[in-house]
Amino acid sequence: MTVTDDRSAFYQNTKVAGFDDVPYEEKERLFGLVKADMRFPDYLYGCYECGICVAACPSARFYDFSPRRIAQAVGREDVELVYQQMQEDIWECSQCFSCVRCPRGNNPGGVILIMREVAINNGLVSAREALEGYSRIIYKIMSTGTQVSPDMLQPDAFPDWGPEVKDVSDNLDLWRRALPPETHHTTSTGWDVDEKTLVELYLIWFHTGALDMIKEVDEGLHMILQEVMEERLEDAGIEV
Amino acid sequence: MPIPVQELLKKKEHFERDPDRLPHDFRDEVFALEEQGEWIVQRAPDPIVEVPTKYGYLKKVPKQHLWHHKSCGQCGHIPGYSTSIFWVMRKLGYEYNDPRDQTSCTAWNYYASATSNAAAQAAVALRNFAAAYEVGYFPLIHCGTSYGHYKEVREELLHHPELRAQVREIMNKLGKPMVMPEEIVHYSEWFYAMRHEIAALQVCDFTGIAATVHPACHYYKLVEGDAIYDPDVYGGQRTAIVTGVAEALGAEVRTYSTWFDCCGFGFRHILVQRDFTRSFATLRKIQVMKEEADPDVVLTHDTGCVTTLDKSQFAAMAHGKNVGVPVMSEAQFAALAMGAHPYRVCQLHWHSADYRPLLEKMGIDWQAAWAEFQEDLKKLESGERKFSTWDDVG
Image (tube, rainbow over the protein chains, first blue to last red):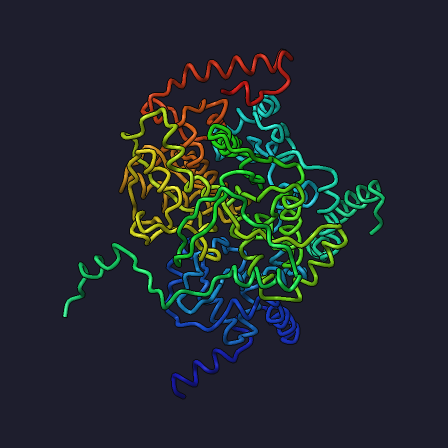
């Protein structure tokens, strides 16, 4: 047996990438969803294997993670490896897009974003695990239209940010009222958002299926968001 | 044959654009879609300043009549950031609109959790653009991620008619027009364009201040073509943003070897996986800056970068690492140069790394300023004053 034969046997072994309890057809279906995204053809053109994306990648310095490995697996349509990456790798990406320095014009960060969307839409374990502890952020952005709010600055949530977090928390209402922009006198949202604006935002979440995406990863959160949004839309005389 | 290192470095000193290699101008497609009746292109209102971009096109930056597309992270956790932007604009005498009819771009969540999709993201962007258009003001994007993401959205809309159709259907349901601004302008581009007007009103001498700059990834890496690159700053090899402003104010900008690195924000990581964020921010950025450049201040121009580089230092300091340098936006830095109050306007008490030695070096009496701010708080606490206003902050 030659070395080449050995490698061939290795690559063709469906157990190498793990997850052999998941049928190949299911992995192929998920990969098909990744490739079907309209952005996919603009994000991957091939790979020189130069490693520039890895050199620029912050996540590659701290995790067993490589944007090149992802670009190559997707490029050569390695269904098994792509599935493994969707379950193990993609949530390490920082989404800084330093990898778009690629001389081939690839956008590995963009491919990863598509893979994440497919992981969410199909309720993959990796997606559920990655978003544990993150539900309140999703609730905040989808229900209030601003992602982080002053009242999130609690010392028990950010003990590593120093004692100033407690100062902010202790004086929150007062310090917010000391801000000269009128839109900034809020504690539970970044700024004061109009009711009408929120109604329009909710309609966007409903009509684009973004709200439904939450159902696959956090059914409880989905129920709460749906209730909050339907109530406000009903108050505005809108039926969804 | 040895590698001609010096010759290669010399070539890198200055970037010469090859006019034959100029990529096509996206604005041609933006206007073509308007001619086809697909959307309205909102023109940048006069007066404008034209600034050079990466591939040589001139970008229009309006001086006034701007609709402030605020940042959730800035307004929520670093409010002196947005307050300084407004304050500088007011001092220069340029009117603006600070809207309530604005949502976040929602891109922080999208990059963190992927719990959205291309159509929703494009609809959120166009709803905000339409809201600005309806009141007759031109969008000015405060957040680097919003800016980068909106440029991504513009690219997607330009090249995917099916996405435009989907978004149009939603905008019709909202009763809003399809609007694309002629330029997508980041606040730091406005500061860059106005740097000489800002410097003309400078009251603090910054000649003894050494700064390092961290450029935001989503500003110059995402859809990089219309980021500002100036042949007179870094020889046109790096984005001129922030550095151009700091130099106009007389500060000494020092470089360091990990200039191009991300700050380590990570979107999801900064909130629920901060071991990564803290490590990267301190090991690859702050410590390198300290060792190689020893700055008095780190200047950046995005929500996540200020938060990450500032807040990550506390834990590293506990481990005796070489950290401990204040971090702020160039908007706050420029406001301080123009005499803004460090607490009433720049709101430095929301920051973590010690900024007081910097204020002392700038000649600002932070103890007196803090006492003044405490007087404001007493008035608010007693009910004598409900809110502080622009008139109250000078």
